[in-house]
Image 1 (cartoon, helix red, strand yellow):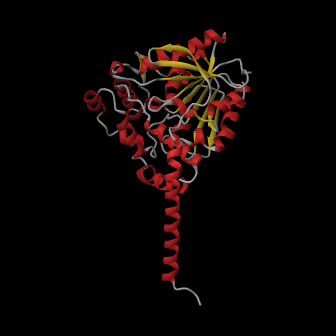
Image 2 (cartoon, rainbow, N blue to C red):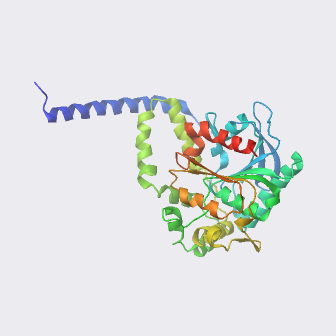
Length: 355
């Protein structure tokens, strides 16, 4: 005799409640054992410094085979250890395994003393200073640069102003056209009175920036992922991975007021790469001056930098050697997913080796 639909539903709910109770019980045992989580698994050494900004060289298991240094420039809005998050999720380790000589600019944590720093400081002082240091120490007339997200936009500015110093340029999930219809973040920022915001707050608090990013996908980023945490409470390794990602998300620096004002107005609001008008210390940024080989990597499911926002680079540069690489994943997955570990470092190294 078959059970009634009501009885079947009741049995399913009871089984689900028991499973949840078991998960919660496992969590009570797992969480005290996790402790603090750490990031940055690859040994590194400081090789250059300018104030709070530090240039690190990563040390691999074997000496690099590439003669030309590869400099990673990350975004200002997050900490750069996303590229070296943990042993099995590290773009840096992948590049080192491919023989690259990898360096990274760490922007540090700005404070009120940095309130009036400009984009010109980041591009023509910090990035250019790091590039010149690597040119001098390596003996190479030009180096390779990997610019990521906002760091890619800053690298494009630097390359346009100092094209002879770059041998190859790689951009990853880098916004170029800030006015594509599917760019929700840009649509928000275009409605903000940036002058009033910066004049009122000075440096823009990290918590305000994080809230803005979380509200782009409010249910997924504020509710769903924490519900999903219940499913892994009995897996210590998975809980550690979850907490490590949470630590990175909320370990964000404040944004320097004047540099934020310039970036928001010239890039997000005026769409300066496409429409023109970006100027650093009075010098126009013209992407047609980029004639070095360029590899542009974008993520197909990126909600922060939609593919069309990145692919617009093709029509703006003067390079005859322009390549694109699409990645099946999102803005964060391109650094940390298992697919990214297999595909991205080898693709970058192979592209560089051919040049």
